[in-house]
Structures are given as C-alpha cells and as structure tokens.
Length: 124
Image (cartoon, rainbow, N blue to C red; front, top):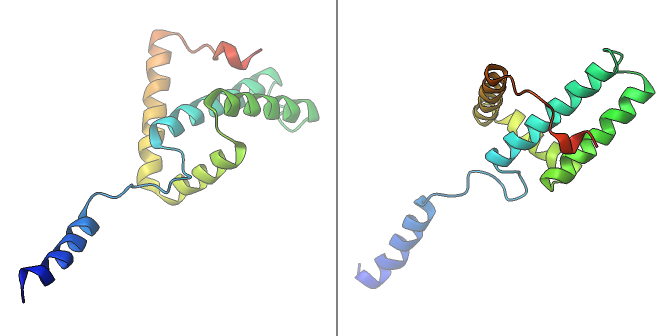
C-alpha cells in the first residue's frame, strides 16, 4: 500500500480516537449543573421550611414553582434543559456522584463557615 492510501485511514483513526465531548450538547455542563442543582435544592428546602413541612399545600407548591423559576432564570437555563440534564446525570451515576459530592462539600463548607443563608436573589 502506498502512503497516499494509508494517510486518509490514519487520519480517520486519529480523529476518532481524539477526545470527544463527554456530554451531549444539550446537557448542562457539570460545573453549571452543580450550581443550578445547589440553588434548586436550597429553594426546595426554603419552601419546606417556610411551609413548616406542609409541602403538599397549594401555597407551598406555588412558592416552590416560583423559586424554581427564579433559579432557572438566575442560571439562564430552562426547566426543560434542567430536567433533561438531571435525567442524563441520573442515568450516569459516576457523573451524578461527582456533582453531588461537590454539593455536599459546599454544604459542609457553608455549615462550617455558618454562612448557609439563601441566595438573596431567590427570596425577592
């Protein structure tokens, strides 16, 4: 075989072995997902605390939806993007574990620093 016939095959092999994006384009990247999920969880906790654990009342549900919308707006993601990404991460436990470990570490740091206040932009 001549070099001319091997070169295209070699290029294809090298390109296909190159690092591909780990995530589909429509999935929120891990660092951003960690931030969105962190605020999402905190918004849910705030609703639960304010409603004194009566989270099934219409008022609690409305308050939770309002805070979720604020979280999505703050992070410039849609509800659909968030839930599609959440489904993706749930289907990929190694990735989800990395995100959740980051969230747990952040919560522990805030607890240690005693700065666990809710993001002020979410309470307006």
